[in-house]
Amino acid sequence: MTVFVTGGAGFIGANFIFYMLRQHPDYRIVCIDKLTYAGNLSTLEPVMSNPNFRFAKVDICDREAVYQLFEEENPDIVVNFAAESHVDRSIEDPEIFLRTNILGTQVMMDACRKFGTKRYHQVSTDEVYGDLPLDRPDLFFTEQTPIHASSPYSASKAGADLMVMAYYRTYGLPVTISRCSNNYGPYHFPEKLIPLMIANALADKPLPVYGDGLNVRDWLYVEDHCRAIDLIIHNGRVGEVYNVGGHNEMSNISIVRMICRELGKPESLITYVTDRKGHDRRYAIDPTKIHSELGWLPETKFEDGIKKTVKWYLDNRQWWETIVSGEYRNYYEKMYGNR
Ligand code: NAD
Ligand code: DAU
Image (cartoon, rainbow, N blue to C red; front, side, top):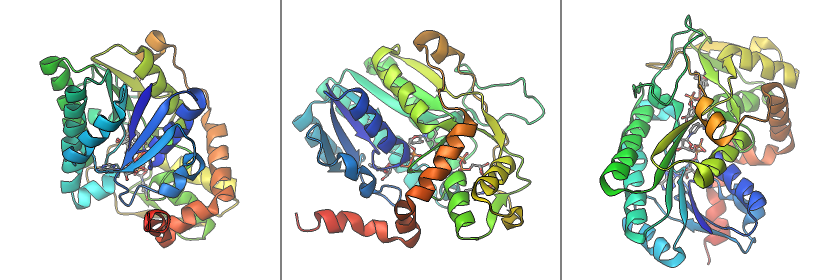
């Protein structure tokens, strides 16, 4: 079985590659990644010499290069993580979000059609549903919740989801979609809330909380997300969407306070800053479908997951310090420049 994993040098994609090589040691895993600012090849160092793993520096929008890889590897399954993923960046400059997230998805699906790939899986997000009000804790996103995106990022992911369903209906492409809530864990790029707060707190820098800090996200440990995708690509029903989340809603401010406590840093570092434009108030997933159809439940409780995550950032300072310094961008050149 050969599985293409796009965006595998990023946060969730890399965790997924490690997970798959552990769970399915006989599978061949091919990582396709353009190595944008968010891709860090050094993350994949532990699997680089695994004979069942291949890394290809390819842009998913580059049709020729993508078709070439399909020709060479003939994958059975494609899991598309590759995306521009940061909401704040999409507010500054939406264009690359449309290109990678929508057109890149189209190229990957065209390749699957052309080469007869048995499953195309789109890694989507709960953000396509828009947000929920804080004063209605009884409301959750189900797979029937209408698409109602707020940011250029979530609109681009919603556009991709619509294309995926269109390819299913029009061409019969065997697709599945997962829409997951906020992930956290090792290798999370330090521009996102949890790793940014850990890195800043360790450097005794201000901890910038947007608006009133009361926005709520539904946090899931990254390995639980990886397990959900593994279940969906093997046992999920074609043409279906599966929401993934673990009923773990937390306000931003409570998370930042928890990180201060874990690191023994004073809450006086917390600084309220101007709110994100169009900031979604609350996300909350109803995971009934994936639980009842595929038996998935999250395994890591937030109290344990956040401790593990903080410890990982303490034990792997070099990984994120080279990102903060920008040095990680030289890694590919250093390793591949003369090859
Ligand atoms: P990330 O930003 O950490 O990683 C994205 C990866 O994609 C990087 O390695 C980058 O180099 C690569 N990439 C970007 N553009 C590319 C292109 N044109 N061609 C090839 N590779 C390209 O993102 P992440 O947080 O790991 O998210 C992965 C996926 O999961 C995204 O599709 C995102 O929308 C989705 N998602 C993320 C979360 C979350 O909490 N992080 C939750 C739900 C869904
Ligand atoms: O819900 C899934 C989504 O989660 C994914 O689709 C996205 O790819 C991923 O980036 C994430 O989006 P968010 O916008 O929720 O994540 P972020 O870490 O950027 O922000 C989390 C919350 O913290 C949000 O309410 C904004 C706030 N925040 C964020 C940063 C970076 C702050 O208050 N201060 C900050 O410095």
